[in-house]
Length: 93
Image 1 (cartoon, one colour):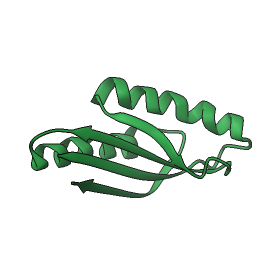
Image 2: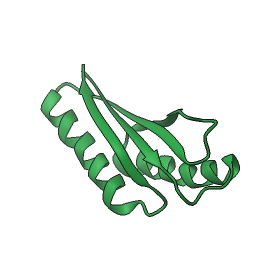
Image 3: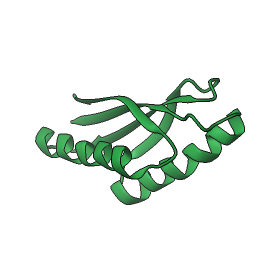
Image 4: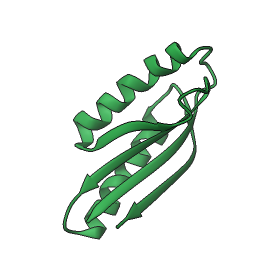
């Protein structure tokens, strides 16, 4: 089974693409390291103050995948000070 978390972020303090990527890179690295997920920026690469990131996990239990991705979502919402979550979505296939 494949679990995917998509998070739409708003980064109000960014004034350039370079600054945006400088804020997203540590977030993506931390998600990979702490939660053992694949993570990447997926959309709005050309917008300064918006980003869509996706995290993916593979496993054999849909409930466990959903719980793990909910943990990632809660962490980003509560612990990442550089932006705010506009929308998030979890899918298990």
